[in-house]
Image (tube, rainbow, N blue to C red; front, side):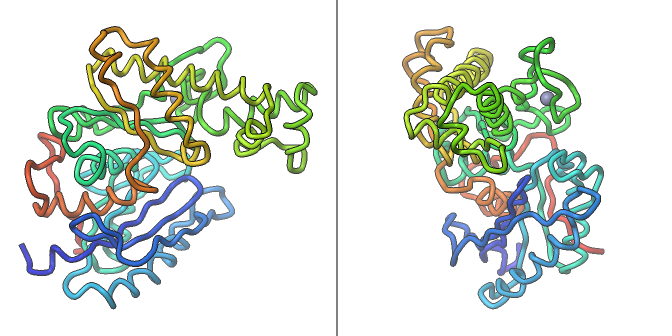
Length: 344
Ligand SMILES: [Zn+2]
């Protein structure tokens, strides 16, 4: 354990559309501000690794002016990540497959780095600093570009056999009438409740001439997810019905998770819950109709994430956890090798 290792960590969260960076200390406090960028994409449609590293370089440089000892980098990625290698195994929104992102970062900056899936990092942040501090069992759910989750069970992150557990957004809901999903299959819950599904339902209502309000909010004849929520604020019953259906399906899906695992807490994040904070309150209320036990109906709490971006905080918590600096139990996955990636 080096003397420098309780210094703040440069946390990086790479989402499907935006890239955020912040310097976060062992107490979970942000040093300075969060910087936000659009994820740069190359002409082949994949997220531009060099462009991302160039953005990071500027912040590594700045972090060196604040961090006295060794600077470490924690990364949160929207996709499946191999924890041991830091490789992005499959990140559909970035169009990355088997990309050794952890190795690229450690080599480029000659710094130690930890990389994991964003949903997993978000759960860790909630367990270490947030709503899950006193919980042995809880779930994380995110509604944004996708719909996904992760689990914290028996006081630890639960990744399952390959680290991919908690993909309740890819439980099939309606394979017959459903749309093609980013995972390659058809009719997953994600295709009904994530941001693009909300926009698609809004688009259909606009094209069918069902809502003058939605039609007035189009941009180049396209209805965005944000426009659907704006239409609700303007009193549009069609937009309200679209989101009522989304809330109902999320309650069915998460109600199933609660019935399966007997958990008392679900923490929710993602762009859609940021755009419409009341969505989580509605889910917290409506989900009770789908819970099997009176205990769950009485005790379950569905709450919003503790920070504006739990995945970013989790990227820092990951580094502190791997280095053994967190107080209390080690919250990391059981039976896996946890290490910091270093350049050779
Ligand atoms: Zn799917």
